[in-house]
Length: 267
Length: 363
Image (cartoon, rainbow over all chains, first blue to last red; front, side, top):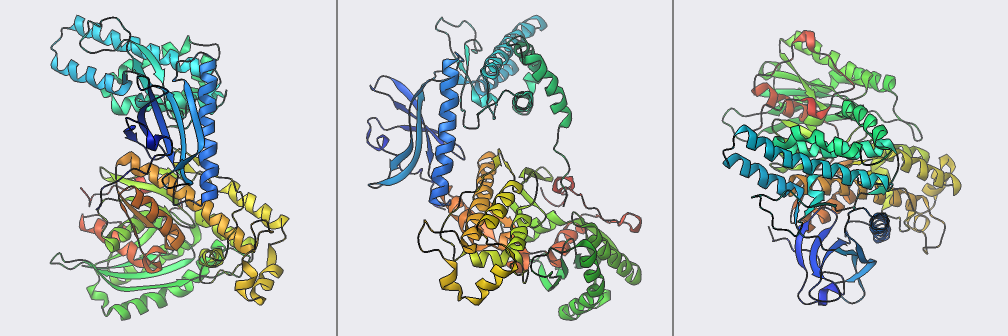
C-alpha cells in the first residue's frame, strides 16, 4: 500500500519559508503550524482540503458553510472574552495545487503554547503511578486535578454564557497554556484553560445542547482518564458557578445522562 | 458442516446453503437462491402481502436449494434463520417455516441477527479482516466497527434508512420496483447532470434522511416531475435525449433529481464512514447491504479510502442484497462456538440491535 501523502497546501502556504509542519490529521481537517506576518510569530493553520469524492458544488457549499461557521463562533468568543485562540485570517476558497486549482478552505489562528489537557492528565497519571505518595500527598495531588477540573468547568461555562456550544468537547480540545512563573511541580497542571477546535461548534443557548456538551466531555474523561474520573465532579462545580443559566443546563444534564445509550432502532 | 440459511426480513425471501469443510479450508456456497416480492410502481411492499409471498414460496425455494446444492436432508447440520431486525409479518412467516423444518428433520435451530449476517458474509467474500463496516439497506443505515466481542455502532441514521429514502423517492417518481427501486434510481441518475440544492444533515457520526426526502419530494412536485404520467412520458421518449438537461440553468429533470439525491445522501454516508475510520484508525472499509451494490456509492467510498491510504471492499448484488447464505454463514460461525436456539426461544423480533450480539467467534 502506498504511503499517505497529505494534499497540496492551498496558496500562499505552498510558498512560505519555513513550510508549515503538519501536526494532526482528522477526518475533516489538517492542522499545521506556520507563522503569521513575520517568521517569529507562530500561528496555527487549519486546512479543510477539498474532498474529491463529493460533487464539486456540494463540496464547496459544505466547506464554506463549515469554515465560516467555525470562524463566526471564534470571532464571537474572542469578542466576549472567552479564552479561545484569536482568529487571524481565513479563505473559504483557497487555491491549491496547480494554477487555478481549488485546494480547500483554510483558517489561521493564534498559536497556543502548552499541552492539551489529555496529555497533561496522562503525564500526571503516569507520574502518580511511579511516585509512591502517602495519603496526604495523594490528596494534595488530586486537589491539583480538582482545581484544573474547576477551571475547565468555568471555561465551558464562559463559552455557554457567550451563546456558543462546542459540539465536540474532549480533553483533546482543551489546552493548558502554561503560566510564566517557574512551576515547581513535576507535572504542570496549572495554567489557563483554552478551548480549541470549533469545527463542530454552533451558536445555541439551549439547555439541551449545553447539557450534551458536558455529557460528551464527561464520557471522554471516563474513557480516556479512568483515574481522574472520580475527580470530574469538580468540573460540574466549576461550571455551576460560572454563569446564571448553568443550574438549568445541569438539570438537563441529569436527563441526558439517564438517556445513556441511544434508543433501540427499528428495522 | 452444512447449514441452511433462511432470510425473509423484508421483501426478499432467500434460502442459502453453506458448507464449512471439516479440514478448515474456506467455506463454500452450495446454493444461493432468492425470490423477491415486487410491488407495482408507486407502491411499497406491505407487510401482510410480503408475508403471504414468503409463505407461498418458502417450501419451493428450500426444495430447489437442496437440489441445487446436491445435498440431502441428512447432510444438513443446522437450520439458521433471521431472528431480526426486520418487518414483523415477513420475519414471522419465515421463522415458522424454519421451526417446521427443524421439527420435521430433527435439526437444531440457530437464530441470527440480520446485520451480523451481512457483515460476516461481506468479510468472507471480500477477505477484509477488520474493516469499518458501512451497512446500508432499505431498513438499516449504520457505521459499525468491531471491538472486543461486539460489532459496535459508531454512527447511524436518526430517522429513516437511506434505502428507504431512495425507495420512497422512486415511488414519488413512479419508477419501477423491478428488480429494485434503488437500482432503477441509479440507472436514471447516470443521465443526471445538474445538482439541485438539498439539505445535508450530518450530526457527528449520525445522519438523517427524512428532511431530504421531504425536500426532494417537494421539488418533484414543484417542477411537476412526479407521478405516473411523467414516468410514462419518460419511457416514451428515447432516454438519452429526454433525461439530461442541456444547460445548468435549465429546469431539472427526473434524472437530475435522482442524481442530486444520490450525490447528497452518499456524500453524507462517506463522510460519517471517514469519521469512523479516523476515530478507530482503520484503513479498510466494507460496504454491505442492498444500497451497497450501488456503483456510485462504491466509487465515492473508493476515492475517500484511497486518499486515506486504504481500500474499499464491496460485493455484488448476490451477496449485498438480502440472501440466505449470509444467515447460514453467520449462523454457522455461532453454531461452531456452541450457540443454539432452543425451539421455545425460536422467536423473531423487529428490534434487534447489531451490538446486542455477543460475537464469540472473533478475537
